[in-house]
Length: 228
Image (cartoon, rainbow, N blue to C red; front, side, top):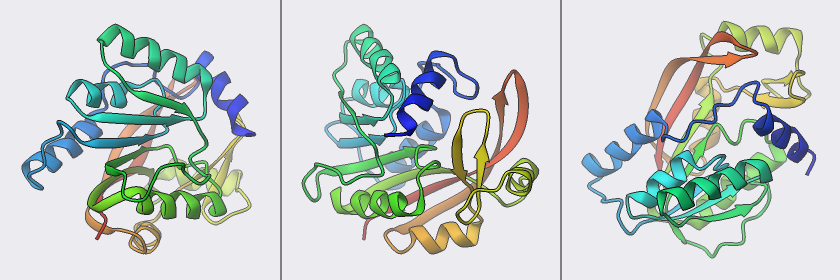
């Protein structure tokens, strides 16, 4: 897996990632939506965390009483996730895995799937697999949360597309990290994801990403979706 070395290096000496242990606010907001609007309690749910990183979301969900599987390409990140799980006294099934390949789970295995900026670096072929497999392993009426890079209104994204374009549509090369990343217009996001899921809510959010000690304004899509 060519990206493995890149992500191991990033987790050892982060240029972009945060090594925080607390769950991400965007995930917590999604969970509130699941509880309050969809009327689903988290305790006892089966949850798949795609690109689980250092376990900040997976360990939190396990603490809430969910049964969680975390797939992560970086061994360095997973070792830290497992260490934190032990410290918290929770159990998560962490596995080294490329989320752009077919999953080993049975059909309709999970109530909820998370993808928090984890599919950005997939190529188009891998992204189709990730979408097909995420749909397959979700239970009917299961929920899918995606946080993705947004092109609309993002000057940094448009500049990167101009000065360092990738070979596929709306991709750019992050030369510092050696990664290709995909950004989405609202039209493209809806067109792609609605082929597989019902989009319940799609919100554009602006945050600041820190890279090499400098803050950059970036836009993101937060998508709440359901398998019909």
